[in-house]
Image (tube, rainbow, N blue to C red):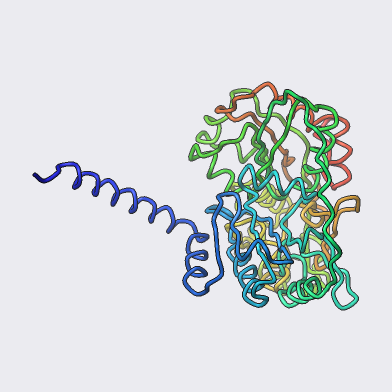
Length: 420
C-alpha cells in the first residue's frame, strides 16, 4: 500500500527548500560562502552571528567585525579578504567574520572595544607593518590600508615567536539579576555610542546592554518590515521616523530627541576643485556634488540649505545621492565627486580604546553649513513596540541625553538640542 504522506511531505520539503533558496538569493553572503566552499577545501561554518573559515588550531586568528547579512550594505569584500588570508597561509590562519548587525555579533564587537568595522589580528587592534603602525579599520577605501598590508601583518604574526599561552583572565561577575536590552544603532553613531554604553554600565549594573550596529537604511528596512528584534531603535534623524510604517513599530510617544548632528561641506584634502563654500559649488570644476537621499534627515537638510542659499536651481543637476549614505565619503575619496554635503561628525566616527577619535585623513571640512539654512538634524531614540523590557529601554534612552552622555556627544562633534 502506497503512503499518502510521502508526496505531501516531499512537496513541503521542496517548498521549504525553494523558500530557503529565495532567501539565500536575497543575501549576497550566501553566494560568497557557497563560492568559497566550492572552490577550496578550507572548512567553513556558518554559526549565524559569525562565519568561520579554517581550523581552530591555526596559530593566528583574524577577526572581522562588520554588518554582513542582507541589508548590510555591501560588505561582501570582507569575506573575500578573509578567504584570501586563509588560502595564502594554509593551516596558519583562522578567519572569523562577526555580523555586528546580530545581537551576539554586536555584543562581541563591543567586548572588543570597537566602534566601527575592523580586522583584528590575534586580538590586536593596532599592529606594526614595516615600521608603520596600522589599524585595519573600516575599509581600504575609507581608512587607507590595503589587503597587501593586512597580509604582511598576518605574515609577521605567524613568524612571531609564541610564549606559552597564559590562562584567560576571568570576566567580572555580573549582578545576580540583570535586565537585558538590545539596541540597534547606526554605524555613524557607533563611536560616541560605544563610550556612552560604558558609562551606562557603570551607572546601571542592573541593566545589560547588547548592541547591533548597521547602516541606517538597512535598519529602517528592518523596522518597517517588522523584522526588528531590538528593544531600542536609534535613528540618525527624526525625519527617518516620520514614515507611518516605521512609527507603528514603535511605542507611541517614546520617540526622544537626544542631540543634533551638524552638516558640513566636505572636500578632498587636496581640494583640486578649489571649493571653499557653498557658492563655489556653482563652479564648472564642481562637476559632482554628493549628499544623502532626501528621505534621510541629512539629505533633506542639504537640499534645504542649498534652497535657502539660493543655489539649488543652479546646481541641482550636479547632485548625486548614493543609495547607501556611507558611499558619499567613498566616492569623494576616489575622485567620483568634488564635494559633499554630509554630517561633519563623519570625519571622526571611529576610535581605538583609550585614544582620541580617529580623524579622517583624506577629507576635510571646507565650510560648516550655517544652521539658519536648514532644520536641525536631531538624533532620536525610541522603544520598539515588541520590547519585553520597555522600562529598561526608556531608562537607557533617557541616559543618552543625560549630561554625562552629552559630554561624549560634544567631544565627538555633535551639538546640544536647540534651546538646551
